[in-house]
Length: 392
Ligand code: FAS
Ligand code: PHB
Image (cartoon, rainbow, N blue to C red):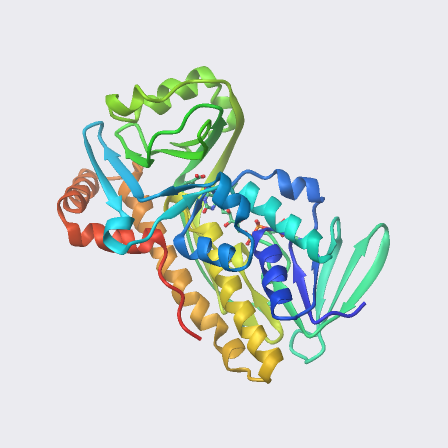
């Protein structure tokens, strides 16, 4: 088989990339390890930055999002059961963000791929990348018990943190930066009305987050110790603990119902540099992971893909390699900005088991400063709503 761009992974990065490339008239082929049903069933992110919303709208991918998604003027921070303030992205920046599930984004991307006849080889195993330092790379894989080969001009690793692409970059070239946090998040989905705002809580009992999927479906999270599993958190334990971490006036607004999904995820910050090696590019979780506190993971996948599709579009249209040569540095400027913001919010809002009294005091005075300073709130609002893309 031949194609111009071989994409590894059919998550949001891979599927959005195939869409944007097709709009540049560039042919691609997607290789995915899992079944389509498995990929479509994953429950993950829920906040779309203003820039992500723009990319989806400008590429005809936002009809359902605009119908079912919920725009927000900002997000709320509450802490220690007393103080509360609103990071008003609309007032500071004239920008709103959207709550709309990654699960729905994935479905919309698959539907668009079907409409344009995109080639997606699900359940492909033993994917191996070859000739990345040549001008004629190829990808081998096994599907339906048979070996296959795809000759291409570029390979893009959209295969997530545990994928094969990043591991195909020589260790002598790759630089990795990592920070692992001493706690995880328990996430649940429940058919109850959401709070009015996406609300982050810092409480002596630990972090909690109330978010939304629709008027009748909420996504809730609490910080849990690293060794906790879903089994440790039956509903009868989750609901009182979750509500205990919010001020009384908000806790009273939280209805209870049987949870319909429950998962525990560890938290880490991770960046791999460079995001390009020869004819291989990395995009999305293949290159970076952020703690979900800043709601950046999915949005970084979108910004990587926006930059890369623009760069490949210029290459195929004019032969210029300027943007593909500059892709890694440009993508990493936004990646590190989001990585820092996610790290900052994780430190601000969680209770660290090893925190000293000094650490705790410093955290509380940072919250006091954020509550009292419009400048500090504007800076956080700018990061949370999503920085503008850099011009080509
Ligand atoms: P993905 O991991 O989504 O997709 C990679 C794809 O590549 C997968 O389908 C995988 O099957 C495939 N693949 C892997 N190896 C392969 C191989 N060798 N061959 C072929 N295919 C291969 N972000 C937020 O903003 N907010 C959140 O609340 C949030 N919660 C999360 C919860 C969990 C449990 C996880 C894991 C992530 C969460 N994230 C969250 C981050 C998440 O949304 C990612 O940022 C987003 O899925 C990134 O998309 P991709 O880069 O496409 O990677
Ligand atoms: C979500 O809606 O799933 C969500 C919202 C905000 C976050 C993380 C997850 O920071």
